Length: 581
Image (cartoon, rainbow, N blue to C red):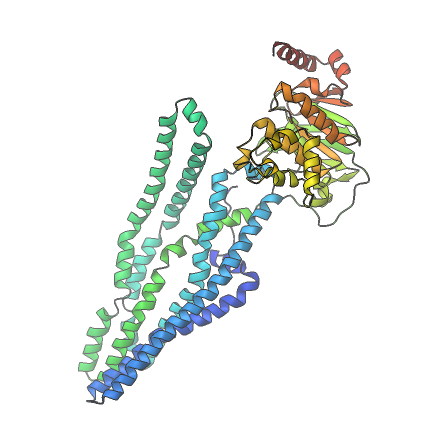
C-alpha cells in the first residue's frame, strides 16, 4: 500500500478517531489543567512566605501553615494528575482497540492483491507498533500538553498585568529557544521516515530468515543470510543514531535556553527596582512565578519527538483505513440460481494486465475445469469468481446478478474455496475445520473429516482433533493440511466449490482418497476446478484452455484432444510423467 498525502493535520485526524470517548478526553484535560494549576499554586504561596520574611514576620505558625498548604497543593497535584492519566488511558486503550479492529476489518474488504502486495512484516509493524504509538498522543499529549501550555500562558498574563516590561523579560529566551527547536524539527520527518523504512526492512528480513531457516541450513546459506540480517539490523540502528545525532545539539540548546527565564528576569528586574519603577515585592513575585514557568515548558518540550513523528505514524495507519476497498452493498438482490457468467473480464496487477477479455458460462450444477500453462491466469479467474478481487472491466454474475451488487457475506456463503496453499491457524484441528461453519457440533466436524478422508490420520495425532496444528499448520504435512482444508470446505456446504490446485501436495497413494472426498464435497454442486494433473478433470462437463490471459478454446476432454494442440501437448506431457512415476 503506497503512502498517500492526506488532508488535515495528524492531530485533527487522531482526535477524530476518539468517537464516543471524547467526553473522557475532555474530563482528562480538565483534570490535567487542575493538576498543573495545583503544581503552580505553591509558587504563589512561596511569594507570601518571602514577603513575610522581608516584612520581618517571626511567627512560626505563619510559616508552618503555608508549608502545610504547599504540601496539600502538591498532593492535590499528584492526585489530579493520576486521575487525568487514568481517565485518558482508559479511553485511549479502548480507542486503540477500535482502530486496530477497524484496520483488520478493512483488510477483509480490500482487494486481496492490495493486501498481499504489502509484506507481512510491514503490516504487522503497522497493526501493532504503529497503532501502539498513538497511545502517547492520546493518553499524554492531549491532556498534559494542553494543560502545561495553558498554565504558563496564565502566569505570563499575570506577570504582564503586574509589569509589562517584566512580562517581556520573562519570554525573552523563548524566541532563541524556539529557533533552536525549529532548527531541530527541520528534516526530522525525513530522518524518522528513514527509521520507519529501515525498521520495516529489518522486520521483513527477520521473518524471512526465520521462515526460511530450513532452506538456509540445507543449502549452506547461513552466512550470506545472516549477513543480510546483520546489515539490515545495522541500517535500522544507525537510522536512529543518525537521527539523534542531527537533533542532539539543537535539542540541548532549546532545552537549556527556553526555560532559562532567570537570564533575563534577574538583570532587567534588578535595574527596574534600582530605578524605582518596580517594587521589590513585585520583583520577588515575578522571580518566583518565572521559576514556576520552567517545569511546564520542559514538560512541553519533552513531547517534541512524539509531535514530530505523528505525521508518519498516523500516515501508515491511515494508509490502511483510507485504502480503496471492494464496495459491496449491505443489502442487495438475491441470485435466482447458482450459475456463473464472466463477460469480457479484464484484470491486471498494478500495470500488468493478466486477463484480456475472458468470457465463460458455468451452468448451475456443472463441473468446469480451467487448464493452461503456469501464469496463464487460471488462478486469477478463480479468485475473481471467489470475489477476492474486483474486475477492472467487464462483469461476473451469479444467477444473473452482478456479484458487486450482492452483499459480501451473502456471496461468501455461496462459495467454498480450496487452494493449494490454504492457511491453517495455530488452533486445534477441530477449530480449523469448524471455521467452515461457525457453531457446527463436534459430531458434524468429525463427519466432515471422515468424508474428506482425514479422520484416520487425525486420530493418530498426539491429541486427535484437539491437536494444535502450529503456525500456518506447520506441524502437519502439506497433504494433511490440504485434506483438512477440504474438510473445512465440506463443512461449509456451499453450493459453489472452487478447487485451485487442490491436490497439489498430494502423493499418488493419497490422491485417490482426495478425489473421493472431493467427489462427495461437490456432488450436485457447481464445481470450478484448476488441476495440474489433467487426469483428474477428464470427466468435466467443460474444460476451458487459458493461455496468456485469454480463453483459447473450450470443450470436453475428447473434443479438446482432437483439435487443440496446446491441450494435446499438455495431456501427453502429463501422461508421460504419470507413466514414469
